[in-house]
Length: 249
Ligand SMILES: NC(=O)c1ccc[n+]([C@@H]2O[C@H](COP(=O)([O-])OP(=O)(O)OC[C@H]3O[C@@H](n4cnc5c(N)ncnc54)[C@H](OP(=O)(O)O)[C@@H]3O)[C@@H](O)[C@H]2O)c1
Image 1 (cartoon, rainbow, N blue to C red):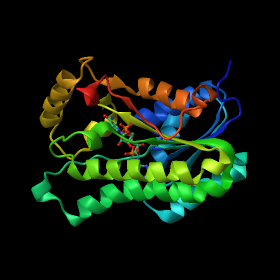
Image 2: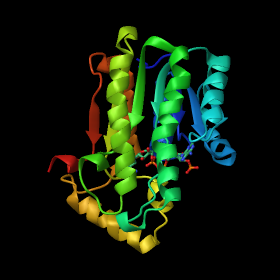
Image 3: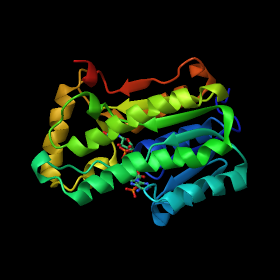
Image 4: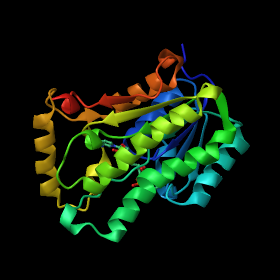
């Protein structure tokens, strides 16, 4: 049975990694999916491999006007939203002594301001008993060298999600976060680091994970499906780690 039959779903960062795997799974489960990303050509490329009822919308989550338009285009095509999956994010690295204004602003505008403004735009058009999901990270639960601003951004988003959970309670809207550990996605190629450094970092992560490996986007997508669907009808306000146990040891 389809778990999201005709559920209108918006996914940010949907042209790659976790967002793309989730879009594919949700389409298979009968959802009407709006895939959003910041690059038209990337969305056009992934559209070729998708089946089902979907729309692509170019929107840079760090821009207030783009968040507004994303929701407007969604409502115009499909009507009100059932599932809002705020997944887009970036993870450029910097040691604490080298953080710049630009680094801070880029990370916080994308990872914190983006989802906060998207929620604000979506709330009037989100169905009661709907579901809001954030892709957070385990990084704010531990100290990983170089990830300071990124970790701070995810910690901020976690704090925000608790307040949101309370503020939408009268409408039956569930708010949950997914905290991935190391997941094999293109994000590691976008960290402004040489390939060999990323490779070494990856080996270190894999060794630290109790299950001894990176996770796959599809494993996170299945978690998103669970949290977005009726299967998680009494799960609200949590951050669910999908990390092979890394955060727990
Ligand atoms: N992979 C991991 O190990 C891991 C671990 C913990 C948490 N996460 C989180 O998981 C989420 C998804 O990341 P991923 O691993 O799937 O990486 P990814 O493959 O790089 O996907 C990130 C997506 O976000 C998009 N994006 C970035 N900045 C954007 C902006 N300003 N406006 C709109 N879209 C934007 C990217 O677009 P482009 O293709 O144009 O870059 C891409 O579609 C992120 O929030 C990340 O922090 C990942």
